[in-house]
Length: 310
Image (cartoon, rainbow, N blue to C red; front, side, top):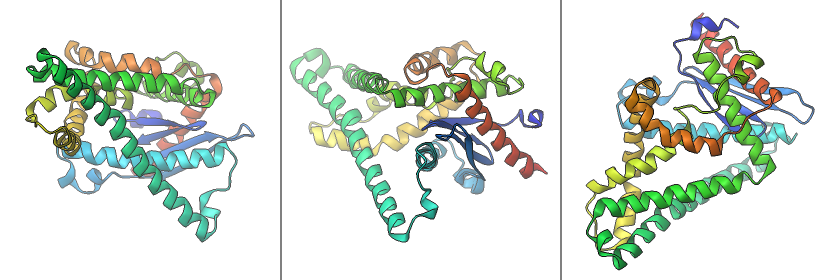
């Protein structure tokens, strides 16, 4: 692999079941270790909507679009990894009925996940703030404090949720692959040869991680929601915050991009601290075999980049 050709490329990824998805500007690569301990891979050229349609590449808007695209890609990667990791029949070889049923279940899963997420991270935090506001004058008269409590509850729920996930051995392995993904990206960004030894010497924490993004959204909401007037009705407040979520995501995405680009400056180092702290929950130290999978995914993505440039 001629890695030196690609040092200007932004690289990111995601842990999946028994594997890693890597994404470069023109490619997506998913490497998974199957039950026979062989690494299987699915790679394909990929350009985002903002790459294909330049008018969409606007600050704030591109963050909203990126979230939708990454959710779609992440779902595809997870489905592939489960098929390979559990040695199941790929959906491409399934019957028409099985494909329709699988698609219907996916749609239901996305809808249920969204409702569950809104309940955990919107309804419960806002309800907690409302209850405290009704019982404490200091909260009812200080909207920033009201929103701070809302944010603090979100972060607490997130921390508890992730901690509970680590109790599962299979999900703990996903967190190890998450660490392997970060370590491989660090080695690439330092222009090191992508060997197991070089990658294992890197940190499992990375400022552009999705965990950092979520934590930053929670924290930035303290400021963001202060500009949304508080309504006497709890349900109106809840609805307005859900409707404003895409804008919050868009603003947070822009700041996270800056944090990644200027991670060497004191200001963005400070901004990155909460997210990096939470990554200690969502990443674990991988073993050599997991690091190999992350390197394999990155190698395959670079092969597509090389073909795109030739």
